[in-house]
Every structure is written in structure tokens, then in C-alpha cells.
Image 1 (tube, rainbow, N blue to C red):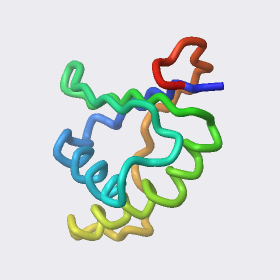
Image 2 (image 1 turned 135 degrees about the vertical axis):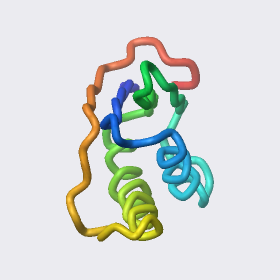
Image 3 (image 1 turned 180 degrees about the horizontal axis):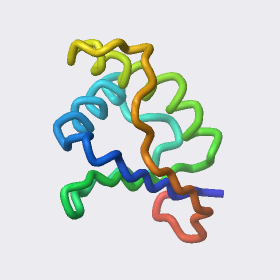
Length: 101
């Protein structure tokens, strides 16, 4: 079953940072199982909406591509890529209707 993942970034995370991480994470092409990806700014805070074919596809992308992209961007900003980062608020829902799923 398809899922919707909504991630609200910590207030200190900028749109430029999110876009740089996304660019790195998808450099090898679209992620397997990814259906759609939308980034918005609401009240100055970045929120990401992703639809995935399954939670497993999302988890694989996160561990194999997203986390390394975050670590790369942290290093580029002069931060220790192994230090804990502020975590987004993450909500995951079953998606009963998703185009392309």
C-alpha cells in the first residue's frame, strides 16, 4: 500500500539546505518506489510531502541515499556529519488513493 510521509523541518533548517540535500539524494536518478515529492514553505518553516509505493521503499531511500546526502551537506557547511542533527517532525499515513501507485 502507498504511504504519505509529511516531514516538517526544524525552524532553523532553510529551504536552500533542503534543496541541496534533495539534489544530492536524487543525483543517481529518481528513488525506487518514490511516487511524488513536494516541498513547501509555510510560515517560514519547510515541509516536505512524499508519496511512496511502500514504507520499505521510503526506508531504503532514507538509509541508502538521504542520510548520506545529509551528512555530505553537513560536512560542506563545516559541521561534523556524525553529530546529531535536529530532527524533523515526521508523520506517515496509509495513502488510499495515490496517482501512479
